[in-house]
Length: 275
Figure 1: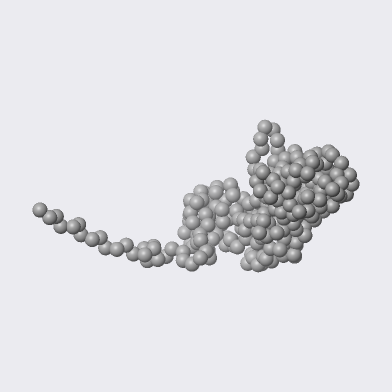
Figure 2: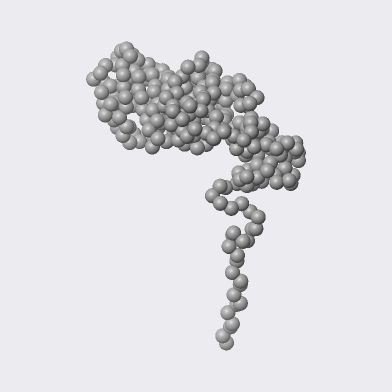
């Protein structure tokens, strides 16, 4: 006996009509707590506490879930006061001391760059969530950038950007032009050939190396490949941004430095301040 096929279910409406009132367009919603932190309104932990306490509203409704999506263009208030979620791009130039990890968590009694940097920030910068732009090894000193803009991190660290990073290495062996010449043509490393580097001898134990990549321990491995093991490494510049602050201190880069020094589009002025 032939059974009748089950009745066809009505087709589901497209997502555009299935959820009327949801966000449309290219811009995706952000988590409410993260959006507040990125805009510098409140640090992430304080933003989560404020949301859970019922102090934050989105489009006139109190939201108590930190991970609630906030659509682009939403009207957000904290303690009844309107806030802007349009975060201006901010970049800090920090002079990293030795024996600090480029990490948010220390290990085996070794401190982090955040433990030195964050307590120094004034109120107008303390609210942002800061990301290290690349890493410097524990023993490496010098210029380390921090930003609240994820896209800038990608821009600066991507090899496709061809942004230069200038290092000064103190080496154990005596350096000469013959030894460093292969670096100018690109040496073979375990993870593939390195791009040709700009190299200058400052003295027989000091070598200046400028690269456009940021692979793990790259400068140390490049110098090791030509018989110049590194004793100490210091980063002097990223793009057109030079290290010009004392060890352990920082300064805020100008919009011109972002546009010219880092070749990053000049940020649009926010409608209101971070708070």
